[in-house]
Amino acid sequence: MKRTRPVIAIDGPVGAGKSTVARELARALGFTYLNTGAMYRAVAVALRDAGVKADAPGVEKRVESVLQSVHVEIDGERITLNGRDISNIISDPEVSDLASRFSALAPVRARMRELQRAAGEKGGVVMEGRDIGTAVFPDAEFKFYLDAQVEVRAERRWAELRKKGVAADRGEVLSQLIERDRRDTARELAPLRRADDAIVIDTTGLSITEVVEELRTRVRSRSAV
Ligand code: DC
Image 1 (cartoon, rainbow, N blue to C red):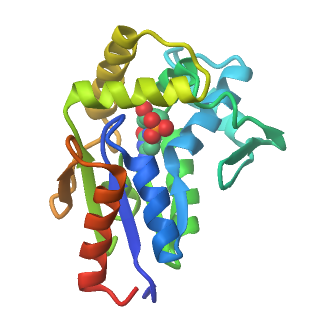
Image 2 (tube, rainbow, N blue to C red):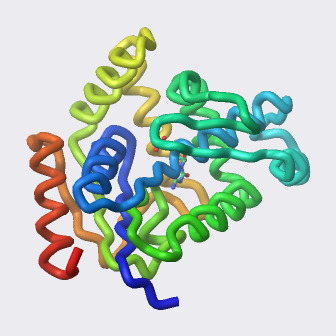
């Protein structure tokens, strides 16, 4: 389908600044913002609550059956799972870890890809995650890959957790971040990687505003948005 407005894909590791930048960019362009990590987190909560263990033998069958009764809605910062508001728990480090583990499973990825494609097919969307430019919208009009030095990313993640009232140890945040990136990069299905045609932005020394400006300029230079 020919889109009248572009799809903007933003991928990258933990703490690269994707969420804030994607949200701000969407606001500046009047586009919809979709945080696909939040979708994986919501599904992880549903699977955890159903007693599913990501590494159990034959887990795919269980996951498929639980997924049939999972309904996730995202409205700005509010995220509901089967009508229950789970906005406050999806940032928990335990949920981050589970989201990363469950996201390696084929039925989870297939379902998320389907929902994400449906949400973005008409364009006018900024979608951020790990595989948007490579697997969900390989034909996205714009692809960005944000990255930053690992210590800087860990510091951002730590500050973000603190802001949300989650007490966390800096060293632990760093080691969890390294482990999650390792798992997200090493998995077999749609692993985190830069699409060959993605523009890489190192956000290490940049403010959110600077990154948003950089992306906005690049989008405007090639599109009438
Ligand atoms: O962006 P985030 O940290 O909220 O994502 C949580 C986990 O979800 C991440 O560790 C891996 C998974 N994820 C994914 O596999 N693909 C995406 N497009 C987004 C997130």
